[in-house]
Image (tube, rainbow, N blue to C red; front, side, top):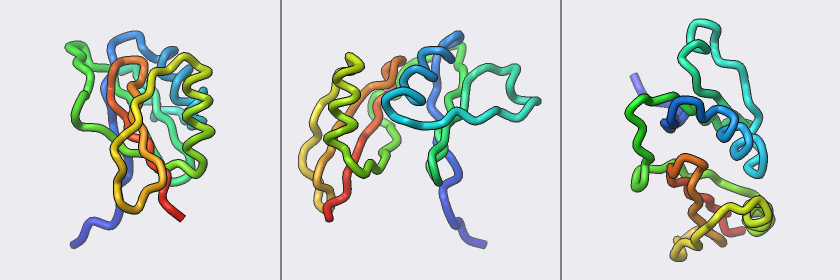
Length: 122
């Protein structure tokens, strides 16, 4: 037995946050919303993906944003994404240099969950 891959990452969001999630994750981040299985759809939340990246947002009644734990997304043209996010009114913080990466930024989703954005060095 061995673990072969990471299937998805789940972030929590407050009740009723689906529209804000769609606006952010399908908007400037460019992920595609995919339907949740019928037996899970009634719970709320929404799922997004692009290629092998799968990000699930689940409703949590006693929601508290993840400030330390976070997903890190690899981005091909991070400066362009940073510009799109800024145009969208999103606040970003440039991260300290990290070996093997040309650019590193942090952003909060609409609910305050921390997300790291990385562009690998060429």
